[in-house]
Image (cartoon, rainbow, N blue to C red; front, side, top):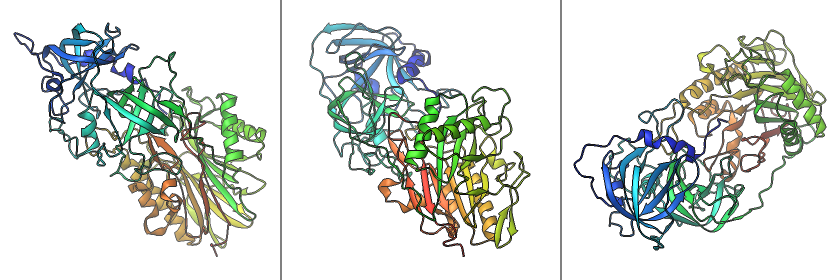
Length: 609
């Protein structure tokens, strides 16, 4: 995961990014809706305004992006023009209070949050209209606030966005969720009895849904089931309430914020539109519990996958213990486990070390301490800094296996750049090297983890397991991008990776059409994505996530969307598999990893002959 700053700190550069004021003999005296305009960009951007009237609705009194929101109690009749506006005061707490009637002057600016390496011109993020260099006069106190707009089911359009990149296009708040939210920028919105669909994060933010009946999961989340339906009812919630007065709730998916949650609508690059709560509903736990997979039945082989999130030998023992409990208790100690994000022994230290044996030994000992089997492990160390991930960490995939239950077929010759091949063997197929990396020098794997193939023997039957961690989605534009549909630039590399991996699977099945093959791991892509469709085309592999009821097809939660990034796929010879996504992490504020593990159970040889 990439560390990030909270929304308030990101906005700190707003003043520096303000458009220059145009020369004018006298400042204009518009109302808020004139400043906001009916498009994404203010028609007055760069101009100096004076005497803009309104009532203070909220104050941000912390961080380096302080300021206040104010709203016009006399709105116009245009649904596309917002009646709320933010006044940016930098590191200075403004001397105003909620209910103050004010007249504000300043420069109209469009602030566009940027990530590292971006500029306001290149970032995909939307902009926020605000006043900078502001001065104001308080003309009265204790004035009633304009009523909050209630986001009831059906309020936010089902269509998330209309296609295009023109920020000067007129907003149509009845046509799309993004236009709706933009037309309410800075205004006070209210949600009632909101269900949490994205757990509380490390920066005191969570996600609720204003459309509880839209794509619900079985455990209270909101399912992301296609590119065409990003669930516009999702809304991020942060808080302006002092923590001493009301600590931010530590919430899991399925919890509720009972009663009223309301505040001005802001925007952050970390999720898009966010309600900055001045009133925060009461946290009501939903009783979500961590799942436990069924153990393997007699004669079954169990194979699991778990992204352990940058685990390295120097991590806190408690981290190892929590992950080990997940393996032993929740995953029911699978016979074979494909691990993703195993770092080298020195972790993020960029010291040339690539070996991860100490990391894996510590994990094995933690599993034993948790009551599990003493696993053995196999891996191929990568070249230094060649596989992406956290700089210096040299993450890779690796196998754990229970030698009391399954034998690893070792075939020598592996190096970081040696490609494994499928070769004929007595009665079927074998690997030329085991473990071995799949096409490691193919450009598809540049700066990305290489798949690891292993040959296992179970009760006289051969099973091939291929562990994967495809390229990150980090380069994709967010769902709330100003470009619609958002560009998914990383998808192209994963598509090439899927084609290379599929080629190796086809090679195995060409040697032995009855080969039992399990392809699993963090593919960083959805079941409906082109990369997963490449793997399953023609029936060479079957994605087991598709065998679950739709409301259970997820194992990762991002920006309030429950989605599937990890997968288990099997060849036709793997029959009657029992399959679980074991929900122990993604929906919980307290988590050992941001991914849920998965387990498949089947009888080796049952469908291979």
